Image 1 (cartoon, one colour):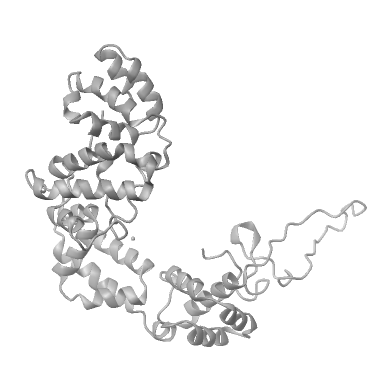
Image 2: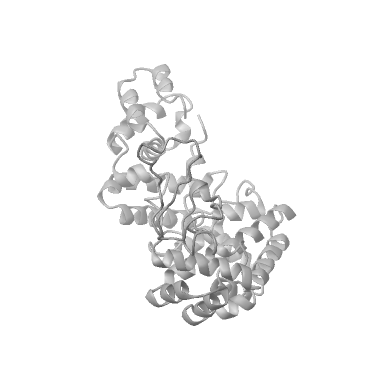
Length: 369
């Protein structure tokens, strides 16, 4: 059976559509291209025109013509933003396909009838970029220079400097990932933190998983103490119930017990600094890293009420596990019930445990964990 804590390690971690449209000149701006985005033939009709089907000279033309699927035109803002992105990548020093995703999101968030109409009417990319400069806040500065390049270089350099457990390859990956999702506003925030220790500390507090990648697994005895883990477990469990409502309420005691043990003694326990940050008044159930706990895996079934067994049934089954050699390591029946509820097939496993007589039968119910 796997370590009872392996499923809790990512509890507060992280707590990081471009339409398939043809380039201008391939069937008109915004036209979807069939064949998994392969360029259409040079003779393809413009968007909105009738599709034509060529036939071999010897083909039988007496029957009805074959049906040809023609994708509908993109919604106005999708088509406009697709064209803005392509023109920006071609005509701006600050944009490339690496950060095109962030530009697409910004464009779709701010797009309205004015931008879509101007882009549709634009004769060339120059006019498209003029429309973007007028309609999209910060576009002109971002077009001239990509602040994310400098910001992500600073971020990656700080990781190399402060994270003794990572190598140069990891820093390169972090730089690329940073650039792919970075926005000018985020770049300003990163560059405003000149201290590498402070910058990396912010990320560590937000993501215990990153903290362990940065520094390696904590040595024995470096988990937080009861003075932090007790309120940590209470707060995280309460936020999960707050987010999920009635379906999660019966699991609250088990969640609290499991989280307390995870915080106090797990091999991958969260760093004390991260626990202190979660417990602080700066973090609420509606802010990271607690804003998504509950509905997100591996707690989804408990949140949606689709475990297949009740908390009481799994606790009864866990009482049998705890009575068998090796089961005592699971702590309490409440914590054990949460562990089982997080696994696929919890309902079947609960039914098996409730009928099991003797430890061999109990162990058989746990196969696959």
